[in-house]
Length: 155
Image (cartoon, rainbow, N blue to C red):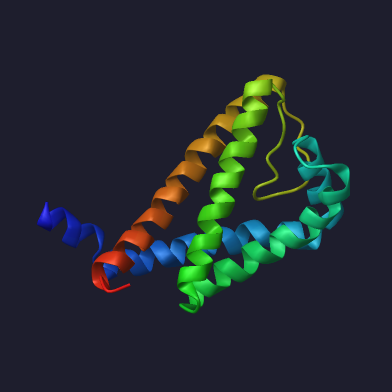
């Protein structure tokens, strides 16, 4: 068990996980920042938020993603960035899962807010993949959290 803990919390792995997660979020944020109306439409399609919050979310969430991603890449405010990214990933997983349960086949808008013509079955399959991908990124957040706890136990 000690060897596993050492391997999973090794700085070599941790820095790569931190950089990869940061890059994912920067890459995901940029197209949404460039095209806020399309992203707001994607947010609307989830049918979860009240209409008054859709535009606010469409405008602010990409900037939070960008700032958190940059913080991880630059190694600043990593604890805050990691926590916000973890919270966003949990929110994304829940939102997509709700729509999967409803049978509401949507484009997630994760990396590109422009709609792509797909069949209902293709969209549902994409949504299932996105949930798995986001769970994988949540594991990355968990690795960063665990590494920090192991390396600085007084925290």
